[in-house]
Length: 68
Image 1 (tube, rainbow, N blue to C red):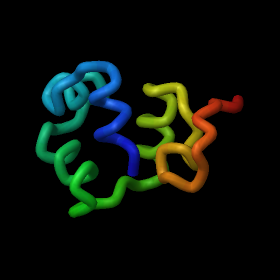
Image 2 (cartoon, helix red, strand yellow):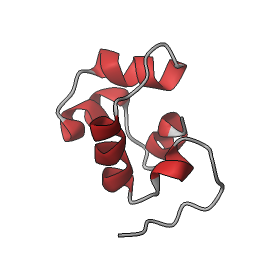
Image 3 (cartoon, rainbow, N blue to C red):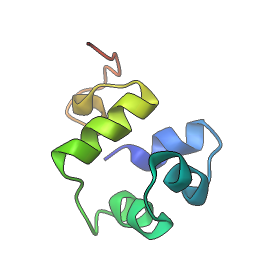
């Protein structure tokens, strides 16, 4: 998942992102390391927050465009 890359582009800490998404810093860390996988509702939340497609978030494409 490109979560770490997207977070760093915005110069955000894991803690700040966790606050923005109403989850724990530990959860963000586990998503970034691949220790834990996000469920579909969380993927939608993260993709919406960064305004990217879920396919981009999951590294299925290099096209970050967000379609609604």
